[in-house]
Image (cartoon, rainbow, N blue to C red):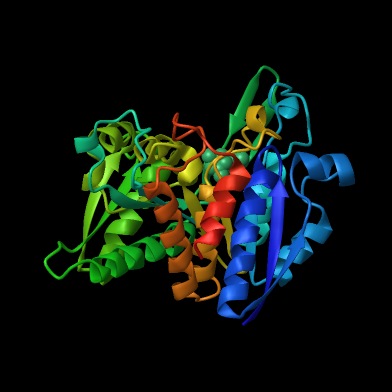
Length: 357
Ligand code: IPM
Ligand code: MG
């Protein structure tokens, strides 16, 4: 199979972790006789510096013409504490999501063998396996924003269509997951997380999901306010199956949920929509670790596994990556976010995973 993969390493530890995922994909191509072409593009702070634009047109074109996009991380402290800047690295990623119509961000939350870095009790995180479907191109992230004298505003808007398309994907995912589980397991469950006791947009989410649920009678629906959800995700995480939520709540809850896995560096994500899909670890640019070769590449490597499965329909190859990742963790190897026992460097973990494919 011949495929074009756009690689956007971005900022901070992005280039270090992405290099490991590319290494793994090259090994997959070699072992399974595929031809993957990797083309790098600029995005984020590094793109502002080199091209004066957090998302140069060239990068956008590259992404539109690719079969899949592997993304690293975005953000630089230089921009974080200077609120008056008009051009910011994050705008690059937000514009890319919007331009590609990537309305659904899929973030699986799970535990990993031998990883004991979660501060939560074993009995709490046992059997955790849920997926967060975060709406990614609407809400407060993309509404009107501005200043008026001594005030500022960020408007949160959702249309029914925006809710329906992401909800449809979440309902289908819940169905698919229940099909894949053992016959004895319960039917699929969808938890809509919102703030419908306060926000009008949340009430539209509930209304829309209630209507849509009629077409998915084999999926149980649960509604939860976001403040309570923040508590339940930590208290009884194994009770969730598929979570559906808006852009802002999804951003916050998935960072929180990564505590279950033991490190945010372990978790991958897929963004799907109208055009090319994008795959990225859920962690940020982690500027303090940048250039030290200590960041965990597993989130990026598992994002590459999602890319193979979801964009290239290479399920067997994707499974081979996951198996290699689990085997390396089972042997007790890890970067310093997950182990204190002789932590290994980013590229060493990448090499070990590659060697097992
Ligand atoms: C994420 C990130 C981004 C977001 C930032 C970098 C704009 O936190 O992908 O979760 O808020 O969506
Ligand atoms: Mg985030």
